[in-house]
Length: 291
Image 1: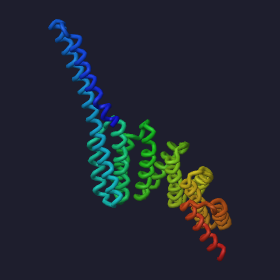
Image 2 (image 1 turned 120 degrees about the vertical axis):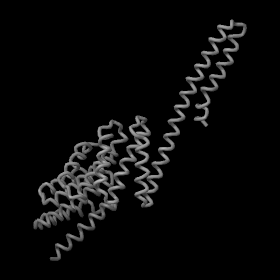
Image 3 (image 1 turned 90 degrees about the vertical axis):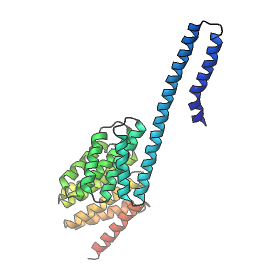
Image 4 (image 1 turned 90 degrees about the horizontal axis):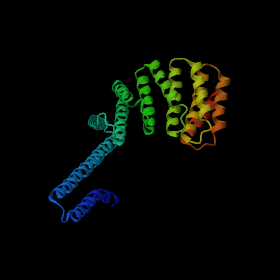
């Protein structure tokens, strides 16, 4: 109701203006009448044009939001190719818009397109989309785009890892951590934690175990006492991975200590990811003790 009142307000003012003009011009000269009426007409044109532009922006935003929701719904149904087509079309339509809401929708669509391509194992295509995103939004100042930038960097690193391009993958994880490692927003920190954990896994694949263990210790130190359950989950999993790596290196005593640390620090935590790490640590510790 308030929106309709705001939309009608300019026209109500014009009607009142016309009534005032009639009062003022009663008995005035023809020249005065023409000047006042032409002035009122000009005001009407300006107000109407402004209102039409605002209405056009509102309609474009509604259509774009509807398209974005359609893409999300298709992805949730597993219809990824169709979702990608919707996202591509939306990005093409919005182009390089500077309208804040439309710009955010374009950024989300491009990021989601990369995610869906990655889910289809089209890693090269996903990397290309992620690079397009970083070119357009990598230096954006809008706070709402920060999580998207972090998500895109994480997704690109995963795509590079899927292609076996480990050194490039590690570089992207380092970029992610450098950009957002000191963030305070939980959503950003969760992506940082996942990036660190995956960096450790990639270092394991490269047999760079000293660096790998240092990364796991970093995750545990950063997030082991976090209030957010997801962050504690990453910390617990990092310590478990540390134990596995120590076992693979034949450092059994340190391996057992790492599993014991997982159980002692996180045994009472109810977070599912934390409990998964605790249970796996218990299984591995019991298996080692029975040998």
